[in-house]
Length: 285
Image (cartoon, rainbow, N blue to C red; front, side, top):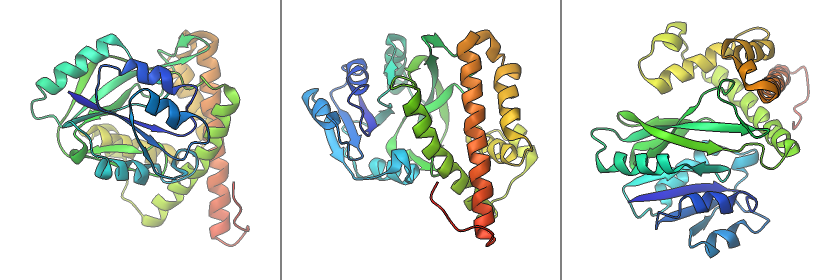
């Protein structure tokens, strides 16, 4: 069997659907960051085990540290853990694939899942930045890095699963998405400055040729951070290069939103850089 791990903060709207999609598991853990709504009550009523750890991680804290704490301290019943967000749903095909994977994992310590994002009732089949996410793993073989949108770092080989994980990032409305990404852009800017301060090594060659997916993704991100006109580049990448125009108006909306998000990161990074050089007072963004 498989344990389920669901981080939450004020997820009373989306959590019931997520829990319904994992009813097949008898070890569901809801890891709450101090919700002010009925999230915890809903989780308990559904039979989930709830761990509450006060944290601003989902809206302004260190998300990697928050998740690493959970993997170390939550007592999962089974060897394998499946990580879901409250606005995600497992498809029947994915449930079957997950079960087969843990029965015969081979040398793999983790598995990637293909996720389908939806906007305006449409699957963003083309414009999505990256559809693959490492969600099934052995907790002692996994750790996370980065303040926001943390990167999964497995200690061993990684496989891939068939079936889809359905994601509804706009389920709470456009205002919620914008508020969340305003917070995320602050952390992304802080991460950029932290990387520069630490003088982490970066090689263009590794951004394209690294065999390890996570190493390649790290160098690609660093390459992207160094590009001029990043917001425009991101829009063209998503809408033109990845053929986001085939996703109709939803594809254009998503590409535009991601471009705006990138511009927020650019502006906040400039502000932090100016502050560190003494040209501006440090302000909370």
